[in-house]
Length: 291
Image 1: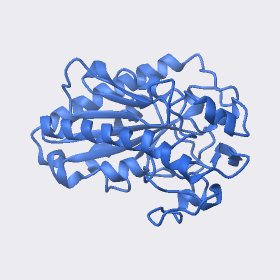
Image 2 (image 1 turned 90 degrees about the horizontal axis):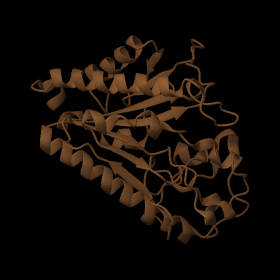
Image 3 (image 1 turned 60 degrees about the horizontal axis):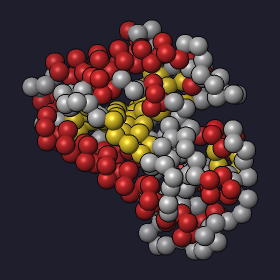
Image 4 (image 1 turned 180 degrees about the vertical axis):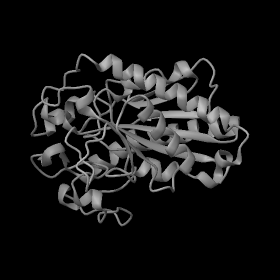
C-alpha cells in the first residue's frame, strides 16, 4: 500500500520527564483517495467513526514531558484498537485465514479490524473486497502502529521502572449510564481493574470531577484491545482509556468545533498536569511500580 501522507506520528517532548505515554488511535482524518473511491458513503458520513480532534485535545502532552502517538489514517480504514485479525467473513470475496478471529462481539457489530460500518450502522462498502486488500492495510498501518506503541511503552518502563498509557477516545453525546440515565462527560476505563491499579483509576476520576466534569468508571466503555493488551499492573504497566463526550466540543451533525473547544483542551491540559503530579507522588511506591 502506498500513501501520500504520513500514516502516524509521535510528538515527542524535548525530554521525556514523566512515565506517561499518550495515544490517540482513532482521531485520524486523512482518507486515502482509493478508500474514498471504494466507499458508498459521502465525505461527511465516512467520518462518523472518528474520535474527532482528540489528538488536538491532548496536544499538550509533550509540553508536560510525555510522548503523544497519533494516527493519521482513519479508524474506518483500519482500526488499531482491535486484535490484528478481527475480520468479518461477510466483507470479503475470499475465505478468511485460519488465524482470523471472526467470532468476536466487535466483528458481529461490524467494527472489526477492517470495519464494515461507521456509526449509526452505515455500511462502508458497496461490495465485498479482496482479502488481500485487508491484509495489506494490516501490514502497512496496524503492525507498524503497534510496533511504535510498544517501543514507547518499553522505553518508558525502562526509564522510570513503570509506565502509564493513557488511551484517548471520544464517544457519542447520547451515551447514558445504564440504570441511572446519567450522561457522563468522561468515562475512565481500566478493564474492570485489570489494566491499571484501582488507585490510578480513582485518581483520574477525582481529577476530572475536580475540574467540573461528570465522570464514571468502565460503563459503558471499559477499554478496548489497546487497554487490555498493554495494561499489565503486575509488571508496573498501567493502561487507562479516557472517553470524552463529543457533544462537549463539536457539533455532532456538522462535526465543526464548538466555541468552547479550546477551553476543554485547557481542562485536559490541567488533567494531564495533575495526573503527572499524582504519579510523581507514587514514584517510589510499589502500588504503581508493581501490584
